[in-house]
Length: 188
Image (cartoon, rainbow, N blue to C red; front, top):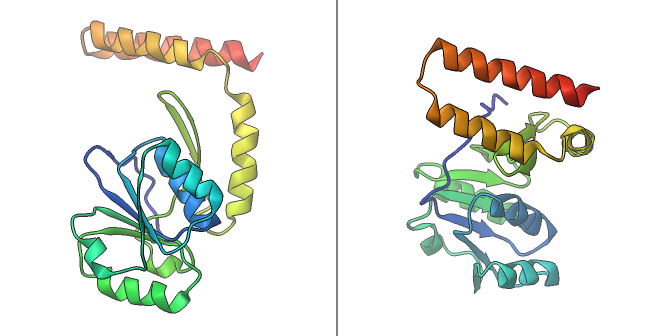
């Protein structure tokens, strides 16, 4: 697959998750750091997912999949064990302007959800383009240990400088030098 790593603006994007099991829950947890506009549709949900739904006041419809739920959504996550249902949903969505992710069919996916670290404004994504998700997860843990605890303060300082200094080569050089110095300090 040829996935382009991009950061999608989730403002005003409506997400529908079909499924109520562990995979659906993992996908919901990944989405929650970027949006709360998530609706979950499933006839049954696991206890942990129910707790997450309640904690974040997400919309849950206790129902089987129905194409009527595809109206006015931007992103669809299909995380059900029923492979025939996944294929049927793909057939219903392939010509719509809905970005889709299917848990068992990479060939149906418009995007994949990478393993990521989010600490305020810092987001680091790790992906093996679907070839080894377990490795991506473990490598993410390794990288997470390398991130300094004060990264949030540093990024706020950089943001302040970026917004107060005039645009141009001088600003770019100063910001680059500050970033290099910061990274050198935490390498030691």
